[in-house]
Image 1 (tube, one colour):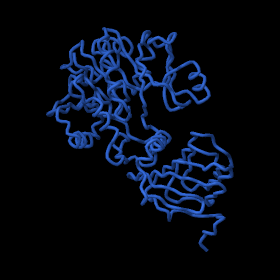
Image 2 (cartoon, helix red, strand yellow):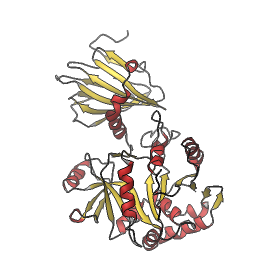
Image 3 (spheres, one colour):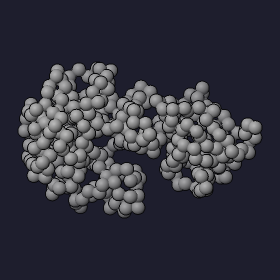
Image 4 (cartoon, rainbow, N blue to C red):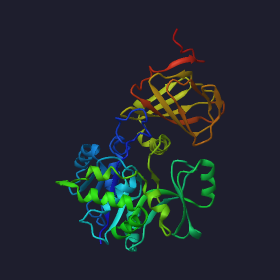
Length: 399
C-alpha cells in the first residue's frame, strides 16, 4: 500500500522575525532558487507516495496554492484550519477525513526541514511503513550535532528502536547529559496509520477527538480545499502532538535517520547552512575589502542579508551600533574578542551571538588565526550606511 504524505504547513516564522508578523513563514522564504516547502515536496515526489495533503491555516491558502502551482504539483488536497491549534489537532483533522482507509499508512512531515538524502529517507519510510499495526507510532530521530536547546530529545531502550523517554527542549547543560546517553533529536516526523492514531486520540484526548470529528464532519469542500468547521475547531485546546499523544503512549518506535538534517528554526541553523554552502555562493562582485579583513554578501532575502566576515590578525572592527537592524553572528573559526554593550568576552566555536538593534558592539582578533563569522542581518534597512561608529582605529569616524 502506498503511503499518504501529509505536510504540516502552519508555522508563522515569528522565531526568525519576532518583530514583523507580516513576514513570510520560514517554509516560504526564498533562498535564491529554492524554499523549504519546495524541498519537502521534492522529498515526497516518489512512487511510494500518494498525492499529498497539505495541512495549513486558512490565511496561508493563497501562499500554499501559489507555491504548489510554481512547483507544478497538480494532484493534492489542502485541509484548512480556521485557527492555529498546534500539531495535534492538525494531525487529527487529516486522520479523520472519510476518504482515508483505516489501514492507510500516513507520514506527517513538517514543511520547514531540510533532509539532504531523500533516497535514504524514503527507503527508511517505506521499510517501516510495512510494519505498522493498529497501535504503532514511529518517530524519526537525528543524531545531535550539538547540545541545542531548540529541539526535543528522546532516549531509546538499550539502543533498540523502542523509545523510553521524551524531553521537550531541555536546557543546554541537560542536553549535554542526554547526548552522553545517546539521546536523539526528535525530528518532528511521524509515521503511523489511521486506525492507530484514532485509537490513541480517543484514549488520550477524548475532548479533542470529539470537537475535531465534529469540525471535520461539518467541513466544506471546494474543489481540492477542505475548510474545517470553525465553531467546533475553535473549542480545541492547542497542543503539540508530542505532548498530547507521544508522551502518553507506552510503546513508541523510532527510526534513526542517517542524514544531514535541519529544521532551520533559528538563525544559528540558517547561519550553519550558509557556512556549509558558502563556497557555492562565492562571487568576486560580492567580495569587499576592509582594513580589518574582508566580507562577502552570500545571500539577500526579504528583510535579511547573510554575510561571511573574515577578520585578519590584529583586525579590529569599529565600535559601532545600528539604527535599523539586528545581527546574529555564528562563530565558526578563530577566537574573536566580542564587545557587546558593557560586556567583553571570547565566545566558543559554533556559538551564536545576538546583537540587538541599537546595541554597541565590536569584533577584535588578537590571535594569529583569522576569525570567520557568518553574519545574519535582519531589518528593513540593510545598508553599510547604517553604521554609527563610536571608535575606530582606522580613522573612519566622520566628524
